[in-house]
Length: 143
Image 1 (cartoon, rainbow, N blue to C red):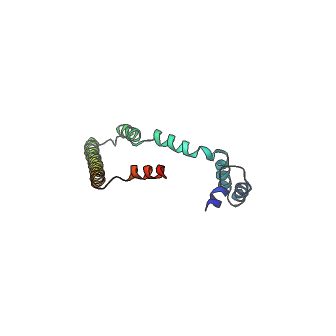
Image 2: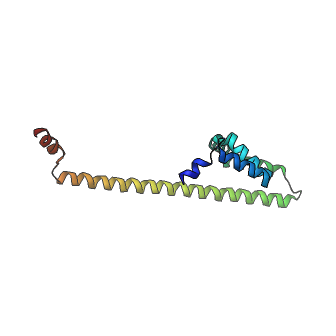
Image 3: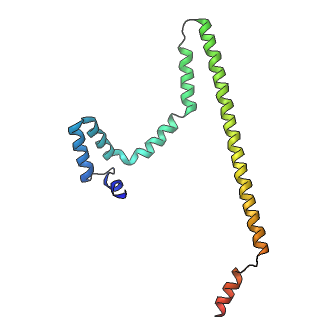
């Protein structure tokens, strides 16, 4: 598996060049895509993270909301109904988001409680058992 990972990488290797040429022969957009990967493949992770930051849900939602205000149907009753429904859906989405945050906090508290219990159990066990760590180093020094 590591061989195939090293075989196709964003560099001018015999394999990537052959794939690009075959791509152009079979269907030119495939060859063009491979050429783009060879030239700019190292920047894909950075490009993806920048794209995600640029199009995060809050900005996208603001853009969609802004477009919705401009796109009136011409029927006042329908537009009022639509606005009320969108507001209701946004409130429901916010409730779900709040529930998700509460659940995340609950799970974090459970993990902390479990960690605390395991640590306390370790400390209690350590206190009841004789500590042999120092004795071993002393014995080794005496030899």
